[in-house]
Amino acid sequence: MIYTVVVLVSQIFLLCRGETFRSILLKIEKIRSLIPEHARIMALTATATERLRKDASRLIGLRNEIVVAISPCKDNIMYVVVESDGIEKIFEPLATKLLQKQASYPRTLIYCRSFADCSIVYSFFKIYLQKNAAGTTLPDIPGFRLVDMYMSCTNPEVKEKIGQLFVIDSPLRVVIATTAFGLGIDCPDVRHVISFGLPSDIESYVQETGQAGRDSFPALATLITKKTSSRFFNKTVKDYAINQTVCRRDLLFSHFDNYSRTYQGPLCLCCDLCQQICKCTQCHTQHSLYSIIQ
Ligand SMILES: [Zn+2]
Ligand SMILES: [Zn+2]
Image (cartoon, rainbow, N blue to C red; front, side, top):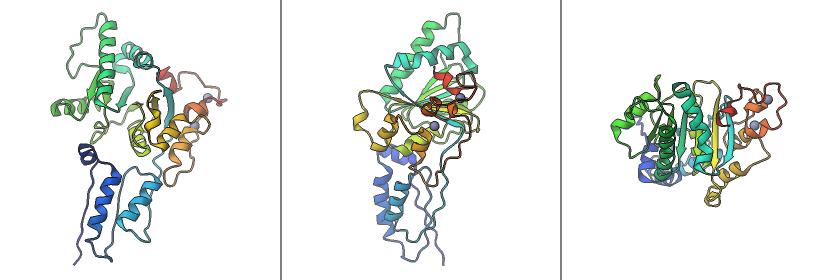
């Protein structure tokens, strides 16, 4: 008789329990000891670095495993790192363009690291739009807002509404969220993912950026670093944030299985570092996604 045992570790579960992927793997090791030695095992994961994948194989007790992996690199995304010099300075250009373009502004997702950051960034947009939107009379209710906020503690009905509005043709252009946003939401035309503050690990960062450009059209992933807090972070993430010499795409995806550079677009749409050495004739014209945040 053949039995199939499925052990599912959901990302929602990890977030709710405040646990990391590694701490859960240690528990799976115990479950593995209950499974016969000769049993066949298939382990599946979404974004995982080569190192994490090897750790997982060892902890699950895989031997002579066959690895099937594709690089999570998406050539339609441009990678940018910007150092923050205050919420107003960093987000005011975006808020100004949002006000000009309103419902035609490119869909943008701003990931924050805490409820407090989420609330502060949301308040900035709310106050800025109210102060500068003379003449507009849109009611401040879901369905009419240009900007909304989504956190794990947000009312489930509001969450569902935001999830719906962000995937259809609606005025909602900017969602300010914790990583709770994205689980179960498939919005194909997010043009800009802004990560405000360093993520906890490089896998999380790649998952965030993967929300951009799911429709395969050009998109932008911006990491905003804060001067004050970088010394406490994961080394791989910190190395990515302070890098000034290597193409950001190459550095980011060198940590993952099977990455080899396939990017063939102009250097000015690869990353902000490649942009500095681009010699194409269209640099700095409106085709550059980088202009969204300048
Ligand atoms: Zn590059
Ligand atoms: Zn160029």
